[in-house]
Image 1 (tube, helix red, strand yellow):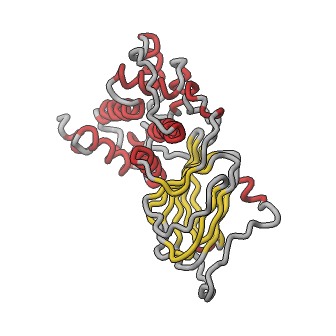
Image 2 (cartoon, one colour; image 1 turned 60 degrees about the vertical axis):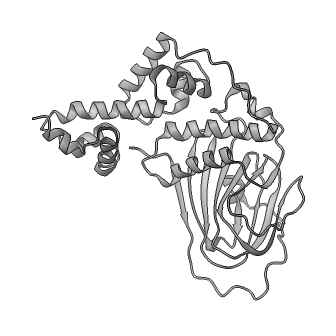
Image 3 (cartoon, rainbow, N blue to C red; image 1 turned 90 degrees about the vertical axis):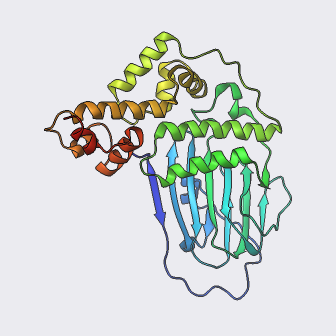
Length: 325
């Protein structure tokens, strides 16, 4: 299946031995770096010790970052979008972290800690790591197209938060992070997780559970017919969630809720099931190879197609074809 647009950066050159004394503090560059302004990602120095992988969907850019050497490093960030940080593994002998609007922190055990930096706020720090840090950065557009309009996400004045934990936000963040690591991930699923992430951030910011909007039922008959026909006609394509929502004249958030109520499954699972049904029809034609069928219905290779087919049917495509006799 076609994977989301993805950028991979690997930096692993050998370095000289680390300095005898740790970095005394973070010193912001006198001039902004043009490449950082263009990319708007967290700057880590020295860059040679970092391995980065990223993927982008509508309104959200996710980047996994791993420190590859035990040596002191600095980091800094300031951009017109929100930054959520999920530290899967992080311990430091020494260091400090600063988020504009909050006191500096010298916390040493950062594992399973979350940090939220609102758009336009300064985030910087340094550390002498005890373990090789693994962190995920979520760059969120305040006015992204997937945000539920009833939230007024782009108008909210978010408060900064440093080294906290919230189970629901953490679990949603890890699910979205897993889409970066999975080359066969569903774009619709990733975008749906992005919607959930914005709701979780609003809940955290308000200090209370979000008030659920009134559920007015599923899709109207004309909406069901229109969306189902569109998916059927473009079953091999990677269809953005926002496109389906626009067809139904709903926000992506409310479309997901209404779609599941009508079809019993989320949009990405329905789309996947229709691909497999199309594959079953094509497998009846013995002149078509399994590879040709995989490419025809939108998979990038045979192995990805075989795994998806087996997941939904319990059989491989070849086994299914033999059983047709």
